[in-house]
Structures are given as C-alpha cells and as structure tokens.
Length: 257
Image (cartoon, rainbow, N blue to C red; front, top):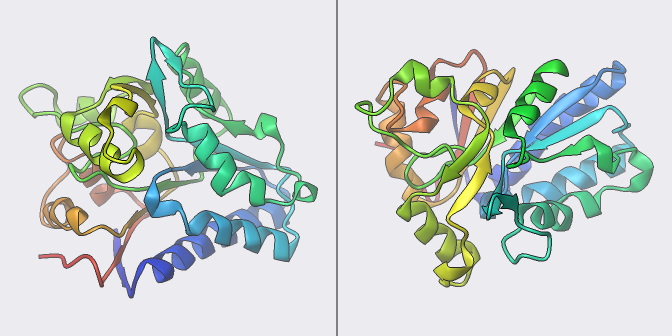
C-alpha cells in the first residue's frame, strides 16, 4: 500500500478529487461503466465540490457512472429521511450531486445507498454489476471504515471480519460522541444509535481503496495501522494487504509515529 503526506486539508481534497476524476474520466472515455464508492463526513466537504467542478469543466460523460454510498443512519429499521439533520443522502446531494451539471448524465437511478430493509440485496446488486472500481474512505477515530466498528479478536476472527456483509450495525459510544461533536453541535440526541453500513467484504473487494485523513485524532489509529497487521480491532488495517490502496493524510494535523 502507499502512504502519502500532503500539506493541508485543501491539498488533500484536491489530491483525492484528482484521483477520482481521472479514474472516472478514463472509464468514460473508454465507454465503460464505473462503480464509485463514496464516503461522507467533514473530511470530504471540500473534495466533492472540487470533483464536481472537474467533471463539469471537462464535460465528462457520467452516464455510465454509478455511485454507492457507504452508509446511512437508521431509526426503527428504516433509513432516516432526507429531512433528518444528519441524513447522508441529504449530505451527498448538498455537497456533490447538486454541483454536477445535469448535462453530464448522472441520473438518480445511478445513485445507490445501502437499504436497511434489504442489505443483502445491496451486496447482490453490486456484485452482479462488477463490484466497486474505486472506494473513497475516511477513518473513524477508533479506526472504523464505513460503520464497520472495531471488534475484539476474541469475538471474531480476522477472516470472518473481512467477510462481513452489508448490514445494520450498532454504533460504538466513541462514534456517537465523535459524530455528535463534529456534525450535531454536541447534541448526541440527534445521532441515531444504528446505521446500515456497507460490509468489509464489498469494501475490500474494490479494485482501488483511497483513504483520506485530516484530523489529529486520526494519528493514533493510522500509526497503529502502519505498524500493525489486519485485525478486526482496527478495521482500517485491512487496507494493508489490499493490492491497490493509498492513505493520504495532512501533515499539518497528523504526525505518524
């Protein structure tokens, strides 16, 4: 895998946007479908408008682009509505989709979110359509990717964790507290306790993994990851043995041990 240090948040955002843009544009030029896995959170706030601008300025044909989001909050077994203040579908529309010129050809039926009512159906459809070509990732302060939360190796083997499918998960206290601080104005009552998350299996099966990090609190899990091995106790560590994975982190906020 590759480790890349960049100057700051803006440099990280532009670096990530360029990687995604060039991959999607190359597929479009060849008339090929491209399955792009997307993440949410503050890490991606500058990347998505920059990516949309690249698509618009180059007039990239996005008619064969399909996007697959990693997760959505769940209440009573159903995805939160777009009107919920933490809705990830609303986040994506606000930060990416509304910025893309409709003439580029990305349509609503090419935008996919995991469905808590039928998570297995999401995996089956994705596998049928060739799996993910590129998966964009953030990393939780506890080392999670998507909402695949850490688990003890006493609870689950490394192999079984790697095979986890898309499913509804209970969020860990650290995740709830972090998301409350970063996205809910410190009101943890706004943060649902469950989410539907794309599983480790479809994530690891992606042809390319791109993980971005820009918070000081991410230095600890990244350092543990750099010097460790794949373990369910640090879900992001599964990038270590992936055939094409890259971690991009901001040097002004993150120092790796």
